[in-house]
Length: 153
Image (cartoon, rainbow, N blue to C red; front, top):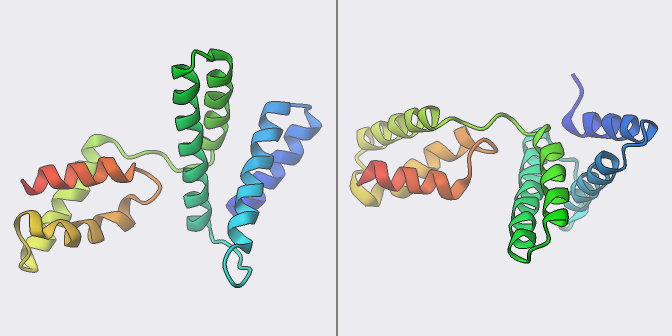
C-alpha cells in the first residue's frame, strides 16, 4: 500500500507529463506544505497519513477562505481558480461525514460520557474528546462543536 504522500508525488509526475499546469501547481503547493510540516519543530520527522490529512485539510481551508475573499472583492476569475485547486485537494481527503453519521457518532459519545458521569454543558470536553478522533479529517471542527453543544442542550 502506498502512502498518501507517495500517491500525491506520483500524481504530480503524471500531471506534469500531461502538461496540466493547474493540477501540477496545486500538487506542488501541497507537497511544499507537507515538507514544511515535516521539517518544522526541533527535529525533522516523517508524517503519517493522518498527519498528511491534517495538512491537506489546512490547505483546503485556505482555498475556501481565499475563494470567499476573492468573491467579496469581485474577482470571480481568481475565486474560480481557488475552487479548482480546492477540488484537486479534496480528491485526497477522506469522504466527509453526512449529518446523520455525525449525529450517530455524537449520540454514542454523549451516551458514553453520561455513563461516565458527565452531563449537561460541562460534558462538552469529555464528549469532544470522544468524538474528535472519529471525525478527524471528515468533518469541520466548528460544525462538530456546534452539533455537540446542541446535543448536550
